[in-house]
Length: 372
Image (tube, rainbow, N blue to C red):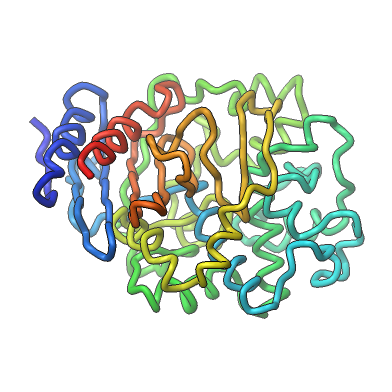
């Protein structure tokens, strides 16, 4: 029987039941789930194994890589710069980044995955991707893709490098430092884009499900006959089963603003619940406003984006609340806000799956909703 730590507030017992069921019935390895409502932590659960090789248990302070959950952190940075008048969504990217000589691409295109730069065309080494400068240099001169799928296409890695450079140009700080100083520290969060080395021992070890990767866009055989998809997901091969580099300290400590965020579920839930203490109501509403919507044919799913945030689609990825927003992450994590309920939530786990239709997170979010 898996040991589960933490607590739920009275009335939220159903959430704990589903969290435990994730271990007994849905094959969970190690995970945490948290929810904050109107400033109060109402769910704070953790359990399972943080490191399978050593049988290290998940603890209250265990940290987890959340992959594209990081894009939500970057979205808050962008919105804060918009609020301060340092970025304008309708401005060409070249206003802030003169070397980016593609005047037809606006800031709004970069944040809403319509910039037609969903992948890097030139080969990238892992070391170059971790350092961050080389991808930015290549994207500066790369021409927008002519592939029709690029019109609305999830920019899995390039979103981070493009948005990170916009933050740096607008504020003169890297996105990791900006997030730390302007967002994480004021809210007292244990969330980083670029983990300080002294916290490395707290990071849970990721494990790949036996059928990983199941999704066609993550498979190397897809890359072989579809260079467009390969440029998005295989350059560099962060998600390759053979080379999987995401448990390395070098990955954790690098500022990878699309997929490198690390934190506790507790703190990520506090971030989403606390957005109104960082951003004005008008700016937060802007962040939730649809900038792009439609069918992403490269990934065969409906998408809808605001300013960096994923917005709810027919997939109901963020639970039963239509106005929910946030961002999920590769392998199954989901993080976001239910604005009408005054609630932020985060589900983070270390068993990477892409074949169960988010069963683990949806069970928790449905239980959370019916507990309110």
